[in-house]
Length: 288
Image 1: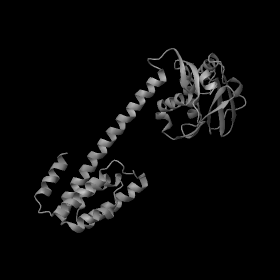
Image 2: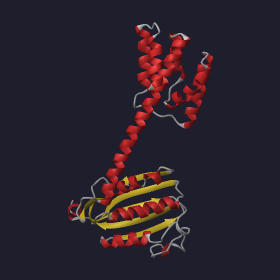
Image 3: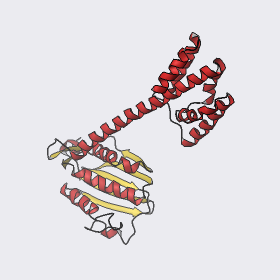
Image 4: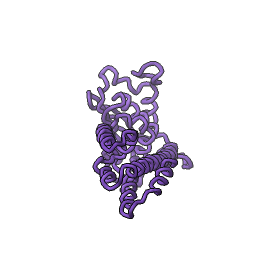
């Protein structure tokens, strides 16, 4: 803000025409709008070099630090060229400093807004995940339950896992005991992420099978070996290292599924592991 004020005062001392003032204001407005498409790292690096070269060609060698700020907002050097074409060097310099400072402030405000939105989504997801303020047994929308769990686990997913969703376009409601089904999805998704070492494709699918909804959670990791597969639902069985797993995740998931009068099974081969959970639909969905 101090930079903006200082640069604005400097511009105020200049004898600018209405057209020049409008040009600066238009550039500043376009660079600070919300819907600027962020560039990838390689593009940012190229833009930074190009903007730096442009500034140096106009004798602004000490403004190199502005190049990075402007490049991050995907600002093209040819757009900045109009400043030097229509303004003298000192005025263009003051305009650039103000524009770059405005871009920095706008980026911070947008990040705060985005972070606030993410926090709000996470709080809502936690409330949904734990079924706070709800009766012990209630109708649960399976897709909504899965999406809530994916939101909770987003910190692990965003490191390199691509989520492929395939939801049958009808609401699937089941009678659930509190947040227990979310524990099932958490265990299955968390195991899939670990199996892929945090990078790969997670597939989440729902479809109807007679009076049941089937939830399928799959991954393209190395698969479960034939020697391990018969034991994965046994309590305290784990293939993870010491301190990394209790061996109770899949045992707990199976117990919860059975409590809901459902069934869980797994198929696996290299590149394609699938856990399938059958759950009886509530009367509302079963007759729909």
